[in-house]
Length: 306
Image (tube, rainbow, N blue to C red):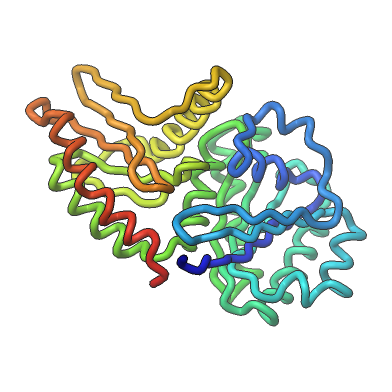
């Protein structure tokens, strides 16, 4: 049996910033509204999430109350910040203590730089739905990105705007998890070949449990930059609805005058979506190509090479 690849992920930020809500939506199949009933995390919530093939996310949801943060930076510093692969720091746009939030982020960075210098760092500017104007949201994101990048320099970090009420949360977590997927370059290369073989406009690979986007290949540009995350959200909600009736979602086909979309189980841990606009391409032929490719992609995903 192949050994599992364990990746430690720290989820940090002030209490009430939305860490547990986003974790519950992504990994525990919560819808957005029920997360409002979740209580604050006390100390650390540990969770091992089997994600893709042999990849296991060792997720540390760290309580953001002052007493816990003080312990993380002092008596529990080595235990908390050693062996970290990814730090995700959540900033609440509704916080009235931005300077204090930044100070705690700096303490996190200092500990990460010393104890896990190779860790990737991501910042989520969260609850962006509270800012009604799109221009104001973009302006705030740009300001925070400049501020945090300057603080972190010369370390590189990635900043996302997020909300549990739209597709931005899926986009951020898809890009974060993408950094941890083994063989992602090979996966991308073979997906592009499959896309051309099928004569498809686009092929997208989703992780089975979370429906986060793992990889995609495209031969025809599309104007909607958030389409993957919207589809993730729609299908995940549909899967939850199926579960309520004790039905299991396996595949679906959507067709209109402009395109055909096929969503089907692909490997043990993934779904595949194939988009076709050419009316001469038969869906049955595409399904056969997908079937032939399954075992090969299964081997790539299960391989331990990175």
